[in-house]
Image (cartoon, rainbow, N blue to C red; front, side, top):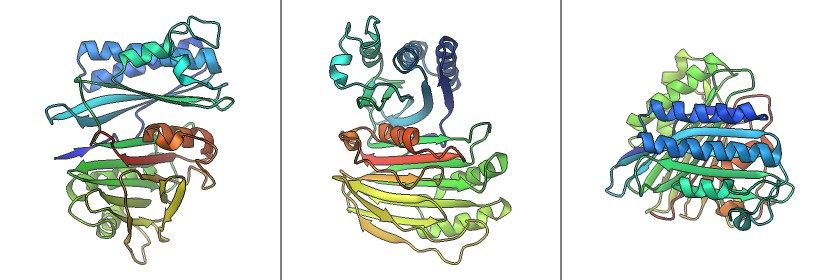
Length: 346
């Protein structure tokens, strides 16, 4: 079964700095649920989760962000299941013991301390990462059906430069059997024209992702993107059963695998897909199911590291993508961060 894992971009971004923003986040979530025809009861749970998460950001950190995106998983009967993911990001005081903070009645802000417990009860999937003095990133997913899961865990943060409506970056990932294909496109510049280039790259993926190897797919993309301003593109194909990763990158997209704190870079070649490619080359590497694959555009500084975040590598890839975006975003361009790992329930 082939199943697209994620929307191409973060679909809703709500800055939290005052009480009115909590209501704005709730409206954004219910609007997104309405767009994908979520059942009423499920939409109600999602609204509660987003309200509590945004309220926590405001009370405990003073400001932060709520990011929302749709994703797809697998229902208990093998059918495709849709979900809506919340990421709540802040740079507040953080928590030394997240487990204790989720017990109703415990609070560091003089409130009743029921927010985290309520989120965990209402959400189908919950994860959190926090360090004292370094804020919190919380992830919650509400699925349309009970028992849904992710066979491959995929985290994506893809947001536009401040002041732009359109994001020139895009990410895409899909799974089929024991394989996953992931792609990031960074359209040249930013704004509508950059977004169009990345949209064309994404549109090519469903039909060809599992047909052509990454290097050949990049060449096909080069032909399609000639009518646009072009893009930097990276494509990875991971084979869990074969223990192999195949990668092809053109332009300034960074890619690496991480396991046990060891980071190994995958090589991208110079060029612009759609305008200037001298050659494409596919690089093969070993793949293990406990590895992370990280792809990101140059909106993220290359000087990031997970070393200062003990335990982060073991969290859901969306948490990792959220931390990298929060702490290493340059702030001068669109940014995309895509992190993938084989799901523990596979």
